Length: 175
Image 1 (cartoon, rainbow, N blue to C red):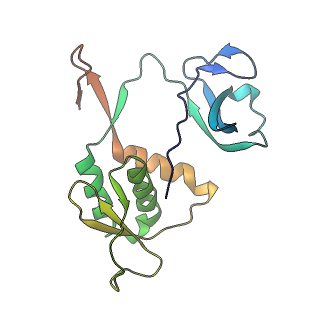
Image 2: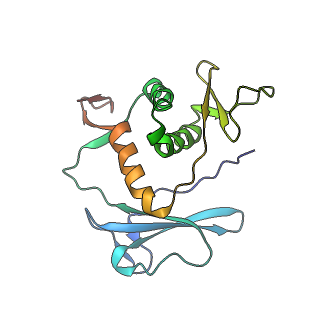
C-alpha cells in the first residue's frame, strides 16, 4: 500500500545563501527526512553542489516570472483518454507509463484489486479508473536519467495549456 507524504511548497528562498530566489532563476529542491516528517530545502543553482547524502529525492525547477501565463492541467477525462489512446503507440510506452504514475498520484486511477485474470500481459499493471471503474493495462518501463527530461517535456506539452484569469473567483479559461 502506498502511503501519502506531504512535502511543502517551494520556500522561494535559497537555503544555503539565505536569500530570496529571483524571477526566472533555476533552483534545486531536496526532500529529506526529519523525524517523522519530511522537509523540503530549496537551493539556487549557484549554490547547488549536488543532493545531500540524506536526501530522499531532488529535482530542478525554475522560479516563475511575472509575465508568464499560468499553466493548467487538462481535465481528468482528457488525461484518462490520453492514457488509453497511447496504448496504440508502442514507441510512447515510457511516456504512457509516466502518465499512468502521474494519474495514480492525482488519484484518478489506482492499482486494480480484482481477481487474477489470464488476459493481463505478463509484467503489466492493471489500473482501475476511479470515475467509471473501467481498467487500463500499462507496461512498466525503466526510464533512465538521460531520457527523463525529454519525456517530462513531452508530457508537459501534452497535458498543460496556458490560462488567463477571467474573474476574481479564480476561474480560468483555456486558449
